[in-house]
Length: 110
Image 1 (cartoon, rainbow, N blue to C red):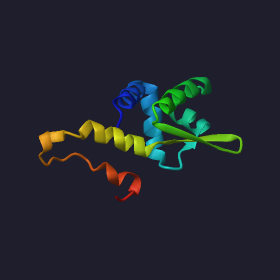
Image 2 (tube, rainbow, N blue to C red):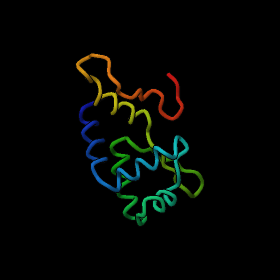
Image 3 (cartoon, rainbow, N blue to C red):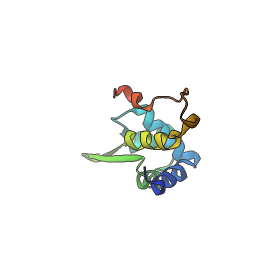
């Protein structure tokens, strides 16, 4: 994973509201949720939510899709797995460890 993208992702997650949004989208799974649902879940006004979603999208952590009048957002699980992989790449100096296998995220099997 590109180190510039890693820095953008970590920077985006280093804010309480953006972290809450991302965690809510991870729980929602691949289908995600509408912007209105996200705002209600994390307690943000729409203008603030839009600002934070833009930052998360710029870091490639969140993807949006239009369905009729609504935009549904979901966590980018590939980017999340890439970030976790980058952070744990040299874990335990190559020795076996108990780092979580992110390939099993959301029921996906490798």
